[in-house]
Length: 177
Image (cartoon, one colour):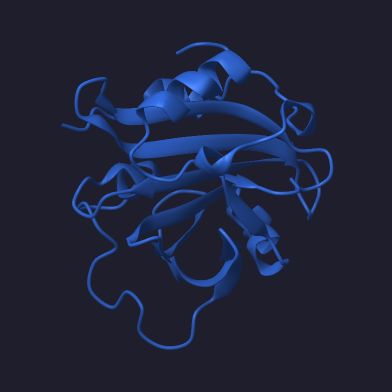
């Protein structure tokens, strides 16, 4: 893993075949704490992770991980501590638990129960899974605010990005083939 910054972002953007989501504007006080992808230079990134850290709306520190992936890969599910590659049975039933804007489109997210202190939300954006994982779980209220996500493949302004320390969660990214 390389240090978060424009060089690592540009590398991910070169390879990514899926959206590279980032809140725009980011919540106050939040910084980008890293990127990861599953795939390779030849086939491209079939899953991308963007991590951010900042103050929790309920006090203390929090971490937000946004995962965009092709169905069947399981990167978001693994980070949420769920069995199986996709959200599983019962997903999408009933009213959504949260809504975000993704590339200018309203996007419904449903919460999933996890076995760890993580709030897990999942929906579909641009025909792919969009996972929003928040640690600790109580900080998941962040998703109840009007969060707008931009796909950084559509361009970004370097001056609008703030980078922090590399998230230790990215060091534990499971291998996806």
